[in-house]
Image: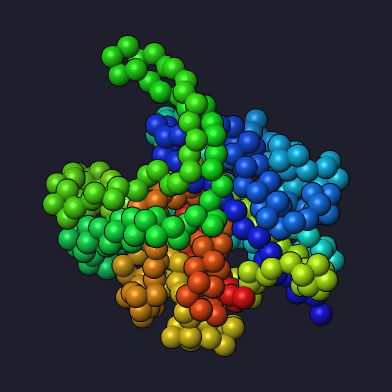
Length: 394
């Protein structure tokens, strides 16, 4: 019986969208940084790769072409390496891993790359103004809230589940503190590949753009000096709302990749095995309650794998908003001490397609350092869905 295992993982640092170090990098180039590093760390010949599965939501800067294929070419892979792009919104990266594993276990492939990336800086800012205006009446006739922006779904969840502004800010503060501690201890170093790029900087006085060469070696969006008082002083994005720039994930750029191989092929070469995806489960929920999707996906995953919540050593739950993370933790009965032990998206950012791969890679590496054997990656998904993946940690 064929079995897919993960033999390497690499990611770029996460950059602030629009103003950050990666704001002038083309999407295939950004993804190629992570892909090339993952191949190098696996110690394989690029020509051995049969397919590349890329998770991405906006696929910005690709001239409407297949980002998976373009990224493979940008990474210098031979033209024999195929590529595809998958969009399950915020779970796109996790879905890419599942597709890659399935291709090995059921499709006869021996080496497949799973990757995820998002290049928000390549999207013109007005996109976020018009993206939800081109509504299809056939959709809204069935689900009037199907196109509700994610920010408003967070406000809806906060209202229905009774999540206070104070609780959201406290969760955000803890996320900042965890990331700061992890950076200080070097717990992200093994996964990050520095990126040298040309950053665009706007002159505040004249509006003129200039370029500067920068090397980004760590996530740049977190704020180690965050205080409870500072978070409390932030104004809500919506009038009368609870969600602020401090208790929600920020707009970000970044890419991540991992190499999956058939276990026997990896063992013949004595390659280090990081772990394996054992199962992925998805579930739907009302679109306006998008953020609580994990409440539906995780029980399905536990039932199908014969696990209990208490069996899981580490949880990586995507922090799209504190308003949705808190109800998920509470309703699933998760031990907070096992959830996002090194912080999450509220602090470091959430490049949509990248996040699933980043969380999977981190749970494998951090899990190994802690002697953990099982980890779950779970996320809320735009449109009213949840996704969860069970990883065995080698």
